[in-house]
Image 1: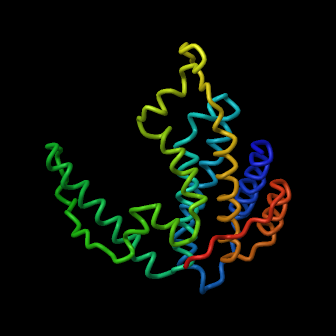
Image 2: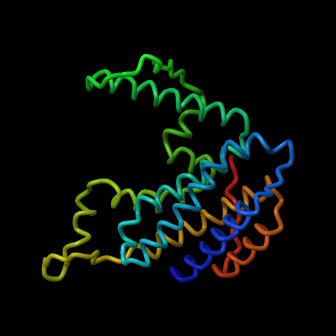
Length: 233
């Protein structure tokens, strides 16, 4: 499955590159605002995919778990912003202000010099904040717990955990290894491939781009499944 997932991701990353390199992204007026709101995330997802594939080629697939987890998280959040629209965009802005306020307070507590032009945002909370702050809640809202499981499993290798520490110790004899002794990359890459297809479907609804449509079909054929976007309940 990992080979098929890798090939599917490559197809959609190339489609992204082709679309952007032409400089001719046609966005219907009614979709322009939300497309601009998520374009940076779409770019991040595709460039992160390149990073993951480079890591895999260098024998560092296991260590790419942070990027894989980020791809999964960004993909569903991107779809949520597109599905919800203006309220979601306002929530993203409010959550950003909240984060900047906390950063400002941390700078003060750490005794860092703060430029005069840098002010402390109010950081007003938005009612949709939980979907940004808690990925589990977003997955539940979409009936997509199947995405949350690989996200949690990858978290084991993103944060310092006992399980993560065991990844380089041979179970049979307790010997030390300089490479992961467990094989997790393939299943994580498969989850990311599904998410990249879902992102492409979401973006394609905004652009209605023939190049992207064809690439989505090709990616799904490589994966051997028809992938649909989760539905917000």
